[in-house]
Image 1 (cartoon, rainbow, N blue to C red):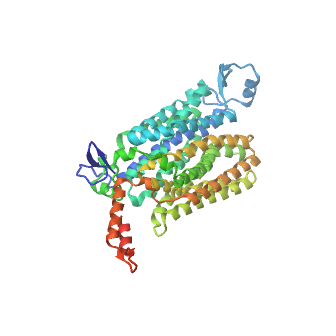
Image 2: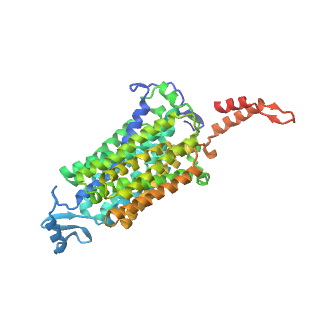
Image 3: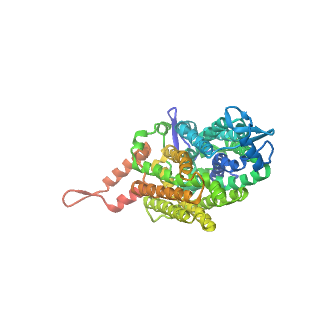
Length: 525
């Protein structure tokens, strides 16, 4: 991507004579993709660590052990004094400290993340477009890691402190999808766009596949604080590495060779910094294909958040799994979806004899309708056939992996250099559902019984079906007019002039363009 600064034109992606160390054999973009994938996963891991850690937090005492049922009953019935008079969630009993949360408290702690991300989303989109992801995402990632390290202290101080820390985690998470849009715009080779998008989007599945089993083991072996300490430390180390190694443009990276740089620049437009910063908000918000992406994101994350936030609870409370087994079993669905997303991204790039708009709608429909059907079967078999229930749980999430060839791919294509804004606002789909899902679950399944969870699954299936219909009707994979840069518009005008000059005059004096000439010109463009 080229930019202009101080009246001089600079090119971030053109072939320049620069000194580079080709230690990665023209594959530096893949190293950056993996590093970014790990960083994105780390931010989401920090948030999900609560879902496995909370299973061990109650009952709890100052050491790693647990209180007996009798001790808990005596504590609740006795005149045990609160550790903090204004916080009933932490009480002292026999010089032990008990921490527990009601279902409503847990919903608030999950919703706090969504609230933080919701409030921070627009400012972070602006900061990312102005200061790029190396600085913005680097600082936010360190903030997420430090906040996670502080959770054990915040939990002991009281729920209000815990809520504040969870909101900070949400603020950091708000940058994730904005980062994906920015990276794919600058670092990807156009024939590998689907693969890069699918790999980075898959952080949403890779994170629970790591956190659930690791968190379950740490929780059982070393106590619940170790879950947060481990996640926070890894996060800090990853983002320190990212700040040192990453560059906002491949042209500025010392390990990107001229060969790789020239490959990345194929298909890239010349976009001025002024164009990048002047986002046409009004025109974007009036575009139905953009809303189709955002509505589809809402449906996708309604199901995904239900599974990732409540799969441990469902497996533990309804199907009767132990905590350590809950962690391992909860990791299977996202791991399957992670593999599906990677495969789907590659497959979408390889299928070239089908129009892109048709492809994104087909992939999205298979994903949403397949997941909805699995949820319906899960609802009908819940608490009766554990094996079938687990299979349906896994398959429902696995189907959603196909969305990388659907709405996830549509966003960057239709928005081009404004992709950070369009894909960044996909985060609203995550945050809004993260706010709504806890209250939906607490209202439909307050006692965590099989029949109650049946209704939860049916409602989620309905959301998937409705949102996919909207995407099929209004979705697209054609570049929007407001996403055309000045250079692209000038090129298009040149194509039009070329076609006009090659036109033939018809019998009635009408101008008839030579079809072959016109098609070749458009293909070249």
